[in-house]
Length: 154
Image 1 (cartoon, rainbow, N blue to C red):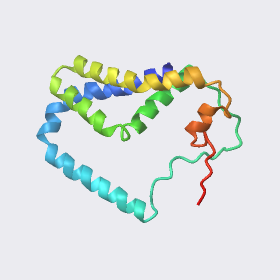
Image 2 (image 1 turned 90 degrees about the vertical axis):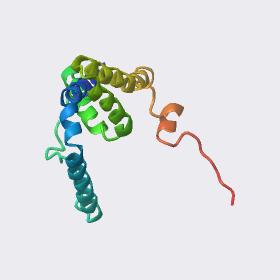
Image 3 (image 1 turned 135 degrees about the vertical axis):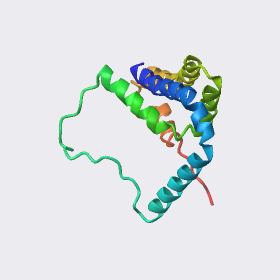
Image 4 (image 1 turned 60 degrees about the vertical axis):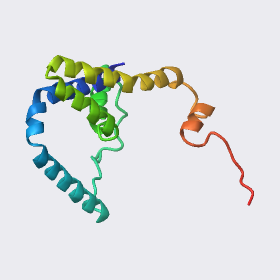
């Protein structure tokens, strides 16, 4: 639940920001597209040359496992929302455009809050019903792509 609230917080802030800055973004759309496109090209070339992003490396791999807290779940939800933004890009872009054109910050926040609830609800349902299921159950094997053994005869 707190993971989803963290997710909703980030998307609601995005909605408020889109509503408040919508006019400014529309005025500078050409420049933003030029800079954004240039960054995508640069990152693509970096990836092709093997200079991609490796993420944060944990120097203390033998440390004790961290305990799970409500604050940690909330922070993880916020982080997940930022990282997931590129995965839900087309739909998120549409909802952000709707928020930007409303002219009302509260309405923009509510649009993105409802969007976050719709994204988080399947995750809550899965974690509620399948979180304690055996990792060898048919559901978990199916999610990993190993639900059924198929033999192909050539």
